[in-house]
Structures are given as structure tokens and as C-alpha cells.
Image (spheres, rainbow, N blue to C red):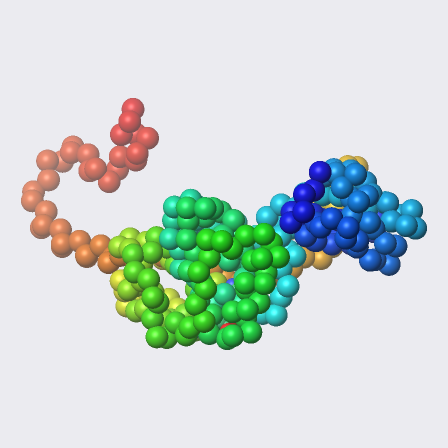
Length: 284
Ligand SMILES: C[S@@+](CC[C@H](N)C(=O)[O-])C[C@H]1O[C@@H](n2cnc3c(N)ncnc32)[C@H](O)[C@@H]1O
């Protein structure tokens, strides 16, 4: 049964989703009628609660996906399909110290806060006061954020932490802040970036090439939904074709160039060159 202060997702008969903080004596006013929270409590998670017009709403315990989708947006946000991969690549989890900029609406911040838990720490930077406030409002609304420290600060002036385990930049011109980013993270830390256009990716790559960054990776994630009809299973007619490009790297000097090979001596004729032995052949 939902408890006061707990988030609950109420889904209307037509699939409209309302993410609300449960409170005793409260009610949800909708086009399908008024839904008393006493009825929601009675139904419990997984149950059905009816409005005063008799319309049945599903009472659902929201997952992190629902929370991120429910973030109030005033900026472009990062979507769940990218967030999942970012969390894995940056190793977000308990005990980790992560830096992020800009906070924007806070959709990535919500997910990082959730995964970092009580022992992790998220430092999020935002230069515009209205988005700084919006990020906190969304963290509170999603029931997370105790482990998030916010800075209303332009990252051009540097980050206030050093030795962070990972850093993510979702700003328009991240190549301008690579020195600041490198100074803020621990040696070998993972860094990530999200950019909407290939021109921006080129500018970022040109900046990363100057170092100290290695393991540079550029990728895009596609999500194609299917119509869940057993005997006519097929993709949806429309899909979101583009959200953004993801770029990842590590703060580390690339390997120095290999020394030039020594000039070859006279060959023994039957000698097998190492290059001819693949990894499987070598095992056999
Ligand atoms: C696309 S939004 C970030 C969205 C956020 N990742 C989310 O998922 O909701 C980009 C944000 O970066 C902020 N920003 C841009 N340049 C900045 C800088 N130099 N320092 C701090 N914040 C900056 C902008 O004000 C904007 O709010």
C-alpha cells in the first residue's frame, strides 16, 4: 500500500499517466473523474482504484524509467535509452563521486542520484539559475537527491572538486571545457558527452585528440518498438530517429608510438611468422 511521501503512478483507462506523491486525504482531479487517495491506498500497488465516475485507474509503483519520463522539462533532456548506457559506461554506483554539467532539467541527475545511493555523491553544475532550481524541484519530485550537491556556476571557471571517479558533460560546446574536466577527475577516470549534431562531435574529437584522453568512442543508440500483437508482430510505424550522439573516453595519455621495428635478418625459410597464428590457433 502506498505510504505518505511515496511516489505512485496512476494510469487512466486510456493510458494517461499521472506521477504523484501520495498523501493522506489527497485526490487526483482528471477528465475521468476525481480519484480519492483513500481508494488508491485501499487498492494498493498493482490494484485498481475507481474515480467518482466509476473509471478504473491502475495503481503502479513507478520504476526509475517512469521517474525520468515524469521529469518536468524546460531544457532538452537525456532519454532513458541513453541514460542506461551512460550509467554503465561511467560506472555510476554506491560510493562513487561523479561530476555532471549542465544540470538542465535534471533527468540524468535523477538517474545518477538513484544509482549512487546513500554512499555515492553527485556534483551537478548549472549556470542558469532557473534550471538550477528546476533540477532540484525534479529531484525532490522523484524522491531522490539527498546525495546531490548543486552548483550554480559556469564550468568555464572550473569545477570545485578534484579526483572524481567520472564526469559527464551535456553542454553545447564541451570542447571548451576539456582542461577543466581533466583537472577535476582522477587519473584514468571515465568521461562522457552527449551532442546532437555531427559537427559538434567533430569539434569535440579535435579537442580530445589534443589529450590527455584515450579510449575514445563515438556511438548512437536506436530504440525500435514493436506492436505487441502476437499474430501480427511487427515494428511500430514511427520511431524517434535521432536523439543524440554519445562520446566516451578516459582521462589518460594515449600509449606512446611503438619504436620502429628492427631491420629483419636473413630468413630460415620454413620459420612461421607470429602474425600467422591467430588467438585460437595459439591455444590449440
Ligand atoms: C541540454 S541541457 C542539460 C540537460 C540535462 N542533462 C538533463 O538530462 O536534463 C544543457 C544545460 O547546460 C547548461 N550549460 C551550458 N553551458 C554551461 C556552462 N558553461 N556551465 C554550466 N552550465 C552550462 C545550460 O544552461 C543547460 O541548462
